[in-house]
Structure formats: structure tokens, C-alpha cells
Image (cartoon, rainbow over all chains, first blue to last red; front, side, top):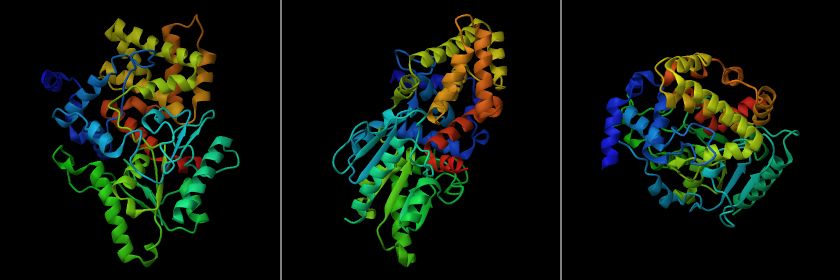
Length: 162
Length: 260
């Protein structure tokens, strides 16, 4: 409960009043903010050791923003999400996952093959960032990206015929 | 039928990039569905917390299933195999959709799919450090400490940091720290790690002062992202950040960029 009391205090004390004013928001940004505050989270915070960013960019900071923006205490239902869909070990079948070594989001993805019905390709290459397989294929693509796509297409063919 | 899932942004045109290439090769009909509460898919005139109650993953997945059913009823060619694609947040949806509605598609591709909803996601920062390596990560820490020293030292120090990025004056310290961290992190995320690390390596030495380090990084950031990255104040900054999040999550836009 004390956590809630603190969050309400933060609403009152937050000096960035503009946050609470919907008219100063781009609608898409506000919708996404809602999704992160309400359900999916993924708040970028400072790790306890070896952080690059300021240590004050912590979870409390993000939750304070949720409270300021929507005028209510919020905590994302990530635990429920992960128990329903499986989190890093998804409950789905026939899903191909691709991740890339320079992508900071990879630790919120699967990190290993989940099972035979959920194959996984992890491309290790320099400057291979987020969704590197999604751009238009080119002969100059790094070999691991080409291999990732080729592996996916094997499963695409297999699953389309099942 | 190839279905590309829309994410947290406006759908600006037909799908491009790899999925479009595949659709051509497979003679697939390629469609994309805009996510509810983004772009033109706004069910309410305002976006208060009450209006947003129906903006959930479950509703978004139900939209995809409902669209598929509707399309099959109205378009004869749609009564064939469906395959689903998504990158980033839509990549997570591409996995979750297979769990919630397995009969609505044959399978999916989840590119950089953020399926694990981690509240305190410090792994993002840790991965930037891991990907850049010791020397470059230490240079990034040097950038952070230059700003932190200056900002903590005096209000004038904070003003000077804000003006390097043309930020508005009512930003909080934390917002500013988040902004600079996002600047270097997204360079790594968008395939520019080598550029970032080379620039820091060339410009930072043991003799560099905080002022020099701050100028180096703000020049780099302003060149790379544009001078309006922070310029129009905190709300605008959030817009850009979350549009960047949208870029993150909307690989379509990246695909367009790459194809040029």
C-alpha cells in the first residue's frame, strides 16, 4: 500500500505537468504509453551493475510517469501476460523466432529454441540490430541474416503444407 | 494469404521489405491490419484512461481473428492458407496470436519479437554494453558521467546540457538522462554500433574534459537523429522516443528505409 501512497505523492509533486495534458501528446505515443503502463511494460531501466545510463532511470521513475500521464496508479499486468502466453517460453506452436546480436531487445525475446514447433535463429554479426531480417533482401546482407531467412523459409514451406 | 500485423503506429502504406519480397515469390495476397488505437483506428475521440480500457493485447488479437473471418467471407481468394508476420511488438503479437487463435493461420514469423513482458527491463541497457564491448561501453559511461557531473554540479550546468540538445527547460533530470541513453542505445539498435563506437573512440581520451565529451556526444546525436530529437520539450521528446519505439516495433518503416 505504501507504494500506492508514494505514487499519488509523485502525481502531485511531478514538475513535468505537461505529461498529464493529453492535448500535448501525439495520440499514437499516448496509446503506446498506455499499453506499457497497463500491460506489456518493457521499461528500460538502469541495471544494478555496469549501467550505461544514470541509476536514477529506475522502475520507480517509469511508474511515476505512468501515474502522471494517466492520473492513476498503474502497474503493468506483465505477470498475467507471461503466464497466459508463456513469456520467454511461448505457449504457441509453429512460430519462427529471429533475433540479432546488436539488438538491445533480444533479452525480452526468446533466448533459445523453445521446441521443435518453435524454431529460433540467432544471428551474430556486426551492426545487426532490431528486425534485421525484415528489410528487403540484398546480396550484401551479412551471411547470418541470409541463413536466418533461409532457415525460416524452410519452415514456411513446411507449415504452409501442413 | 500473408498477414503483416500492425504495431504501435500509423500504417503508412502497404507492407514492404522482406515480407513484400516473400509475398511476390509465393504469389501471396499481402495485407496489413492497423492496430486499434493507432493511426486511423481510433474508436474514441479522446484518449483518457477510460477510453483506453479496450486497448489490450487480447483485443488486438481478437481484431486480427475477426478481420481474418471477415475477409474470408468477403474475398473468395482469402479462403486459402494464412501466414502471419510481425517484427518487435507485432513480433510478440505474431507469437501470441498463434496461441490464442491457432486455427486462424498456418504459422508465423516473430522477428525480434518481445514476447517476454519484463517490467524492470534492465537487460536492454546490459545488452547495449555487451554488444558494444568493454572499450566502447566505457566511453559511453564517460559520456554519461560527463553529463551527470555537469548536471549535478549546478542549475547552470543543467541548462548548458539542455541547450546542447536544444531541449525545453522544464525537463526533469531523469527525462534528460533517459533521452541521452536512448540516443546511444538506438544507434546500436539500428545497426550503427560501429559508427557510434568509432566516433567515441576517435574523440575521447584520458585528457578530455567533461565539456569536450558532452560536445562530442551532442554533436553526434544531433547529426544522427536531428536537432529536434529533444528540442520541442519533454512531450515532444516522448513522442520521438516512442516513435523510435515505433520504429523499433515497426520494422516496416525500417524496411522502407533500407530499400532506398
